[in-house]
View (cartoon, rainbow, N blue to C red):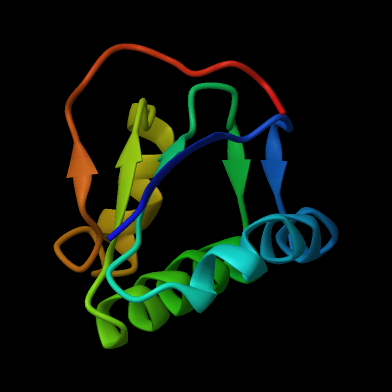
Length: 102
Protein backbone atom coordinates (compact mmCIF):
# COMPACT_ATOMS: atom_id res chain seq x y z
CA UNK A 1 0.00 0.00 0.00
CA UNK A 2 1.17 3.49 -0.80
CA UNK A 3 -0.06 6.91 0.18
CA UNK A 4 0.40 10.09 -1.85
CA UNK A 5 -0.49 13.67 -0.98
CA UNK A 6 -1.06 16.05 -3.87
CA UNK A 7 -1.83 19.75 -3.66
CA UNK A 8 -3.64 21.05 -6.71
CA UNK A 9 -1.73 24.05 -8.02
CA UNK A 10 -4.62 25.63 -9.91
CA UNK A 11 -7.83 27.43 -9.00
CA UNK A 12 -10.12 25.79 -11.55
CA UNK A 13 -10.77 22.10 -12.09
CA UNK A 14 -12.06 22.08 -15.65
CA UNK A 15 -11.33 19.90 -18.66
CA UNK A 16 -7.84 21.32 -19.24
CA UNK A 17 -6.77 20.94 -15.61
CA UNK A 18 -8.50 17.56 -15.29
CA UNK A 19 -6.23 16.26 -18.04
CA UNK A 20 -3.22 17.64 -16.13
CA UNK A 21 -4.40 15.98 -12.91
CA UNK A 22 -4.95 12.65 -14.65
CA UNK A 23 -1.43 12.76 -16.09
CA UNK A 24 0.02 13.63 -12.70
CA UNK A 25 -1.61 10.70 -10.93
CA UNK A 26 -1.82 8.07 -13.67
CA UNK A 27 1.37 6.33 -12.56
CA UNK A 28 0.06 6.14 -8.98
CA UNK A 29 -2.92 4.10 -10.15
CA UNK A 30 -0.62 1.21 -11.02
CA UNK A 31 -0.24 0.28 -7.34
CA UNK A 32 -2.90 -1.71 -5.50
CA UNK A 33 -4.25 -0.13 -2.33
CA UNK A 34 -3.07 3.41 -3.06
CA UNK A 35 -4.50 6.25 -1.00
CA UNK A 36 -4.39 9.64 -2.69
CA UNK A 37 -5.09 12.75 -0.64
CA UNK A 38 -5.90 15.79 -2.75
CA UNK A 39 -5.52 19.19 -1.12
CA UNK A 40 -8.07 21.50 -2.72
CA UNK A 41 -7.20 24.62 -0.72
CA UNK A 42 -6.63 26.74 -3.86
CA UNK A 43 -9.64 25.38 -5.77
CA UNK A 44 -12.36 27.99 -6.22
CA UNK A 45 -14.29 26.53 -9.17
CA UNK A 46 -15.07 23.05 -10.43
CA UNK A 47 -17.16 22.19 -13.46
CA UNK A 48 -18.69 18.90 -14.58
CA UNK A 49 -15.38 17.75 -16.12
CA UNK A 50 -13.62 18.28 -12.79
CA UNK A 51 -16.36 16.52 -10.86
CA UNK A 52 -16.29 13.61 -13.30
CA UNK A 53 -12.50 13.40 -12.89
CA UNK A 54 -12.80 13.16 -9.09
CA UNK A 55 -15.56 10.54 -9.29
CA UNK A 56 -13.63 8.50 -11.86
CA UNK A 57 -10.45 8.66 -9.78
CA UNK A 58 -12.39 7.64 -6.67
CA UNK A 59 -13.90 4.69 -8.55
CA UNK A 60 -10.55 3.52 -9.93
CA UNK A 61 -8.89 3.69 -6.53
CA UNK A 62 -11.73 1.84 -4.79
CA UNK A 63 -11.64 -0.86 -7.47
CA UNK A 64 -7.94 -1.38 -6.68
CA UNK A 65 -8.46 -1.41 -2.92
CA UNK A 66 -7.37 2.20 -2.42
CA UNK A 67 -9.16 5.42 -1.68
CA UNK A 68 -9.36 9.09 -2.56
CA UNK A 69 -9.41 11.67 0.21
CA UNK A 70 -10.17 15.36 -0.30
CA UNK A 71 -8.99 17.98 2.16
CA UNK A 72 -9.44 21.74 2.43
CA UNK A 73 -12.62 21.71 0.35
CA UNK A 74 -14.26 25.13 0.53
CA UNK A 75 -17.97 25.57 1.18
CA UNK A 76 -18.74 26.62 -2.42
CA UNK A 77 -17.27 23.41 -3.81
CA UNK A 78 -19.07 21.38 -1.13
CA UNK A 79 -22.34 23.03 -2.15
CA UNK A 80 -21.74 21.94 -5.77
CA UNK A 81 -21.20 18.39 -4.51
CA UNK A 82 -24.43 18.60 -2.46
CA UNK A 83 -26.44 19.94 -5.42
CA UNK A 84 -25.22 17.06 -7.56
CA UNK A 85 -25.96 14.53 -4.81
CA UNK A 86 -22.38 13.29 -4.68
CA UNK A 87 -21.20 14.75 -1.37
CA UNK A 88 -21.66 11.35 0.30
CA UNK A 89 -19.80 9.54 -2.46
CA UNK A 90 -16.59 11.51 -1.88
CA UNK A 91 -14.34 11.13 1.14
CA UNK A 92 -14.00 14.72 2.37
CA UNK A 93 -11.80 15.08 5.42
CA UNK A 94 -12.33 18.09 7.62
CA UNK A 95 -8.66 18.89 8.11
CA UNK A 96 -7.04 22.25 7.89
CA UNK A 97 -3.53 21.90 6.55
CA UNK A 98 -1.97 21.99 3.12
CA UNK A 99 0.83 20.38 1.20
CA UNK A 100 3.51 21.96 -0.89
CA UNK A 101 2.76 22.68 -4.52
CA UNK A 102 4.11 20.39 -7.20
